[in-house]
Length: 299
Image (cartoon, rainbow, N blue to C red; front, side, top):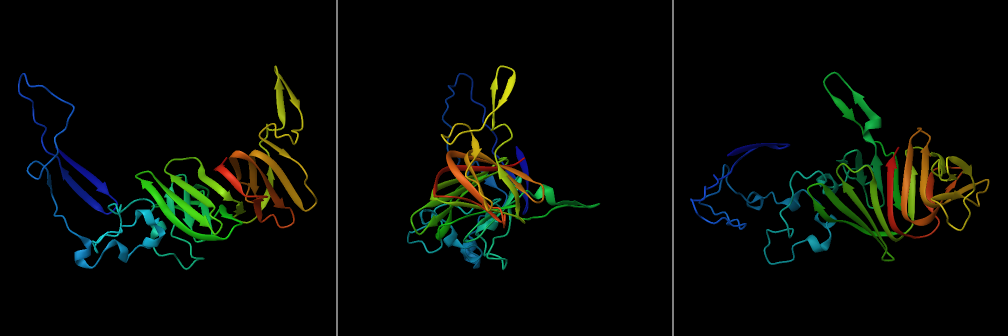
């Protein structure tokens, strides 16, 4: 049986061994025998990049990986405790940064694209910036939302990955943690905060911050009755204590509207308070450190 896999770096031909047919009366078991060189053949030779002076540490920033992922043994040719996943969708994150604010090259975990730096993560809904030509379709990266925090950051790392996702983590000088989970196909930007104060910026400015449309309604039978959600925390969101210069919302679901007309819904696993300076409209920030999951999605 021959399988041909078309990869971004070329074409790989994989030849699988023939499956043996059990003799009549033999007993089949669930145990699969280990393959040996005699019954498994690869159509190309096995090489070590280090032998050619092209080890993986020559083109990535290995300190962007969590120390637990780095090889600590005596073999000088090993960098990680795992085979480096050449061609993984997220490897742009661990290449040397660009000259643009120290940001990485973009990676795509559709439908969003991401960049990160020492201080922030940028998110682009690239479809909204698509340009179609006769022979090409271009999805351009624009930082529709940027996520940062109030605390001083002391480091950032890749902490885990699999074929469809990668986990990123920021650490603060006060031992707080801010994690991001880039998952292929997820409609959400997935984050988790541990004693860290979220800060969100828009591509230009925010038009408004508020509650989901139905958050201020309750239903009695088939009739809808409007009511104001009190500060006891009942409901998903309520607006309170806003001033001429600051708008404040409390709850677990919020709507951010940018001047470009895009709306983002925010989900929090624990109640928190977000505020926006209505004079500059540049940032939306939490009023205190937050502990819990935090999701954003364009709607």
